[in-house]
Length: 132
Image 1 (cartoon, rainbow, N blue to C red):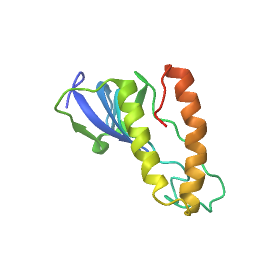
Image 2: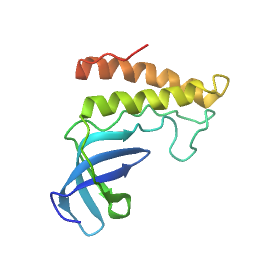
Image 3: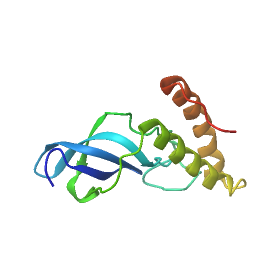
Image 4: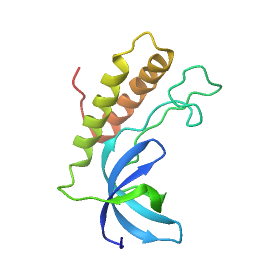
């Protein structure tokens, strides 16, 4: 892959569409254009567990933010790049709906609390509304 190529990239637990802006021996620098999968909440080392020392709140990478991503986590993308805010809202809603399927689960409860805060931030930052 080369600088300028449009790719999908997995960063931590989120998946993004972006453009390669730089190449290093083991990483690509990818400029974010859209969100395919919203990052998971919680501890990266104990995925989907609610009873952890510190439960992390994770927002999606911002539009045009650049991230250094290991080459093995970057793949070519074909197709039309979606609008950033529309893709953010869609990925957020999909993740939230998945969590709402297990309302008794401690991980889901803590994640939904984080998402409530994140949603307010997204609405402010991007002047968007989420459906109820």
